Image (cartoon, rainbow, N blue to C red):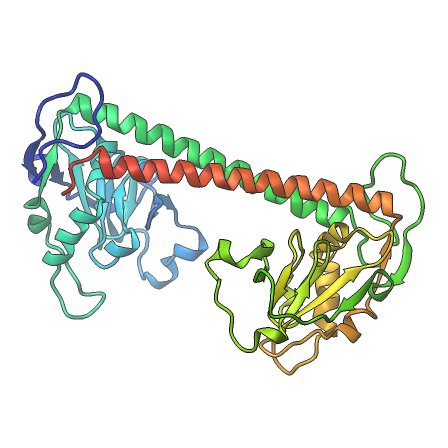
Length: 397
């Protein structure tokens, strides 16, 4: 077994020592009714101590909620549930004083061991694997890992100052990831708001937000006035795929290089065409193609006519108003069979601006999507970096 991690901070050279968890934690057994100093909280998988809320509130099932004894926990305690280890019901209390269900096992850190480090290290897969091996019981809900079995598990540990250094790196990365997730969600919310305000709503002929200099009324027309169906067939060309969230993608990028059926029946797509899934158009399964290629005959291809910007329409087709129109115009008895054929699709009416305004709107949303893609790639990189450090800055073999 390795005695030191693959990556270490400069200045730390001592071998890590094998210790029992009983050297690191002491079981906390403190039962009492909830009160203002120890409010009743929930311990949620992968989140820790949180407000019970409606989802986790079971007080209506308790005959004497005021006097019922709960387990008390304090900041820095290590907590686990025997039943839900694999789902992430293990970790530290970073909330503070709280009362939680007696089904949880609670431990307080010993000595000067770093609570954050312990929270990360003791929730790693190798420790959980050892805990699961100790689990007793044949029925879910009765599984139990006795506290003395847990405390007998061994782990390799550095000294407290190295624990602190490692913890700070993980804390900084975790904080950065959380901030990036919030920024990403904020940008998604902005896009959702603009989708509803830069296109006309039900009963409107123009949107509530417009670019400066555009004041003309939008013209009402059929989709068929802006697009004609492309029904060319070919077995040659790059295989493309239509997604709900990412539009048209190269199949090779999505590891979907396989094709079924007679390739000669596949439909031709050219740059600027809009392709949509006839059975999922009401869910937004459409996009404008940046590529020339072929798609499954299950898709419908619409090619833009002169003075029509297909990027604008691709975003227009994602608005709630048009998704509703696609839904009510789809044919079929259940959502699994709803189908929007082109002859019906082309008759749907909508209000459209002149080409210059179309291009401005389409360009704005394309830039937002590019920024979203960049932020998502950055977030993925931070998560991969954190995972790599968790694997190489700890001795968990």
